[in-house]
Amino acid sequence: MISWRTKVLPPLLAIVFSVLICSIALLISGSDPLRAYGTMLRQLGQGTTAVDTVNLATVYYLSGLAVAIGFQMNLFNIGVEGQYRFAAVWAAIIGGALHLPSVLHALVIIVVAIAAGVAYAAIPAILKVTRGVSEVISTIMLNSIVGGIVAFLINPDQFGVLTGNNLRTQVIDSSGRIPGIPIGDASLFGFVIIVAVVGGAYWFMLNRTRFGFELRASGESTTAAAAGGVNAKRMTLVAMLLSGGVAGMVALPELLGRDYSYAITSTQGYGFTGIAVALLGRNHPGGIALGALLWAFLDKSAVSLEQVNVPKEIATIMQGAIVLSVVVAYEVVKRADLAAAQRRVGRALGGGKPASVAEGGAI
Image 1 (cartoon, rainbow, N blue to C red):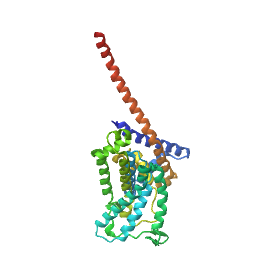
Image 2: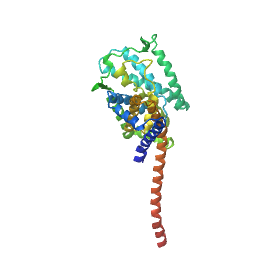
Image 3: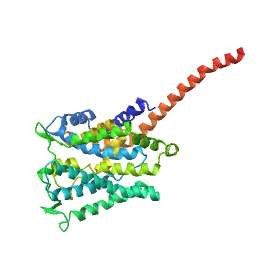
Image 4: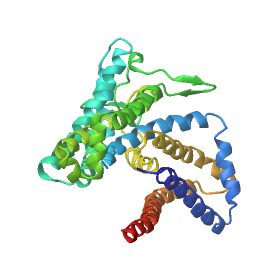
């Protein structure tokens, strides 16, 4: 049984450690850490920053979930970056070409994105279970390949449209868009509701289904799981495909809620951020949500640091420190928890010895 310390303390220690590192960096540069952090917090209450933070966290959350599914099986799906970009360009192409009734149009786009993500994840999955190829190597290579695929598909000779100096897909009709939720002067992505459903489904799968149990059991020990009748290769294949399916939705909040087309200049890097978010959230849907919000907050509030003559890169340093320290923090707390459990067992055994000796003496 994993204690609350193992679940809660590691991310908290990682955040505290990163704040200390950034504070030292700020002091060395001659800046006031308290003023810098206060500026970042105040930025959250200005303009549309709060809503923009939640919108960005929605994207990070999907990316984190995609990575976490692989982590549950001890699979390092570093290919979420390529999978979501491959899915996004096909969803935008097909979504821009279709003219369907409302709701149905958006559903088709979502299904296309999921299917494309699954298809791109199937390549490393099949290589893994049939040839034993490391998913890390194969997905890194596929991440590099996807850039060429996107450039080819968005070319005007294929499915792209030249708009000014930018290449993009056809604009998706209003029937294929997901309306936002007005909050003051800002608009929250309507896709956030779908993301919440995906997060709930992930929790239910892990904790209330046989597949979720087998997934976690295989991640803990493939040997023990195999002895219990779990097919490790099948679990690896399904976990990778599920991860790819969720990865396929990563770009949809922006595609269907703001941009309505996919451009050659569309934001990249969400897949790699998902790795950090999943680590910070300990692969738990609630923890991943908090990690996504923290990451989005650091991204969106970093620009305010320039107002107090502090480089905005300090937020990047903080993010990097979190990534570096979170794994160490998990291990430290895990060992402390294990040592405490061993002491409890030792005390229990020690307490039983006198009685045994006494009984032996009486005999």
